[in-house]
Image (cartoon, rainbow, N blue to C red; front, top):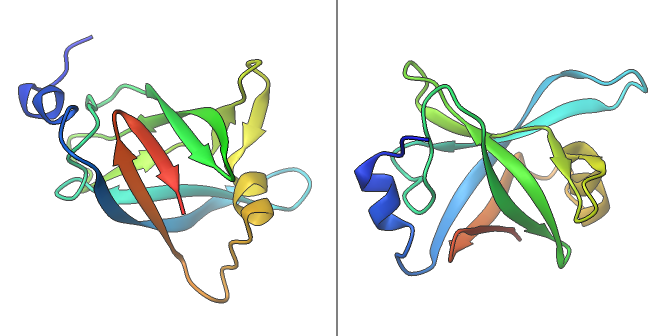
Length: 124
């Protein structure tokens, strides 16, 4: 897996705070929205990513750790946290369910605060 030198170097950087935007990309069969979190590439300094590849990263929300996939393309200005994650037992978990259980409400804000430290994304 080829990582950019810039992104690998920054993986050991101090804690960074980012604002992510929650975006609907469709609907699940049970009519809940399929949600992703996007972060501007220019803000996304602390985790390696490779264009065209899904890279697994730890994602912590409500004190629980999941494995999320991050991806981007060469034409995109953002990095995306994929809508489908895995829990510590490798069971599939939907980002939509995690965000709603966390208390996120699209009527209040489409933004979520993320911190990145030691290669882990924390949702606040």
